[in-house]
Length: 121
Image (cartoon, rainbow, N blue to C red; front, side, top):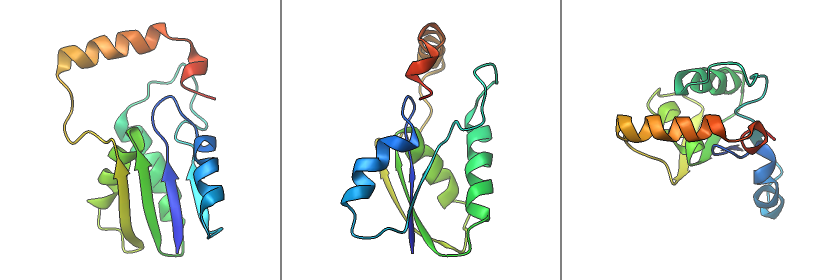
């Protein structure tokens, strides 16, 4: 069974390296959520979820999804789709509901002011 990791915002698949190295199994995959996305692209949750779905749909073996923060939100979205090869989920620090629209607008403004390297490594 494959263990698949989804990172949070401001992280990359490489941030799972230390965790993966401590696992007794080598059957792991850390998905880079922003791979192939330009800094000029408009990114939203549906787009990221479609990208993750495309990767998971290519798998031929059972898997467990593990997500942190943004990765957890995507894991939960995958879990409700009843994928036959999905055998379990592990989520940490995921939001179960969207934040207040005003707070989200402020957060997005802050993210736009931050340098690109903070989000994509």
